[in-house]
Amino acid sequence: MADVLQEVAGRPADDKQTLIFPAWDYRFEYLEVRLDQLTKNHEAYPCTRIAADAALLAFSRLDACEPTVQEVRDCLAEALTERLVDHRWTSRVREGLMKERSRTADDQRRWEEGLAETLKPQARILFNTIYREERVPKRSPARLNQPDRLTLEKLLAPLPGGAK
Image (cartoon, rainbow, N blue to C red; front, side, top):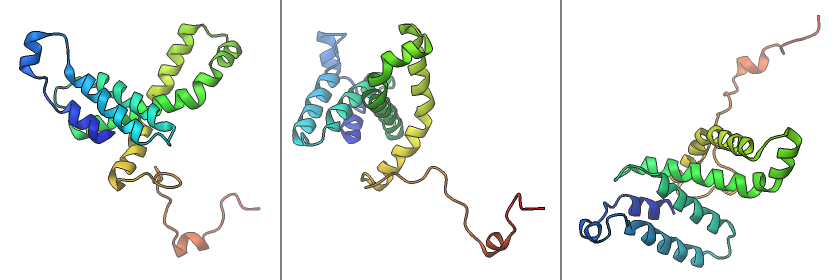
């Protein structure tokens, strides 16, 4: 879907079309058709529809006429993470959270926006693993923080907070 989004977002709007309908951007409709085709081809995977909706959201958020590949990927990673968190968690517990925290609908919306903003950097890092390896890891993406290498000196060092 990132490739389809890059293909569509990277195209400039057709000058002839904008003369006829100045406010109409055919790229959005073209993207919808391509995403519908992908969704039909991968109907066995329930997350495909969520990913397609995230791609449409990412396209609407891209401001640049010709965004870079990394901008498209980052925008798709952010939108997909936001959709998945909403689909799998937030939408299921929204009313309970509002009651428990005594929030209004506007307060809850602002809190969810803050949550999405907090998750954006991590989403970009995690999705870069998928783009780099060109596959979805079977169990989990690469670690965000690599563990320290174990050396003989570290192994033989006394444990911190030892008995006195």
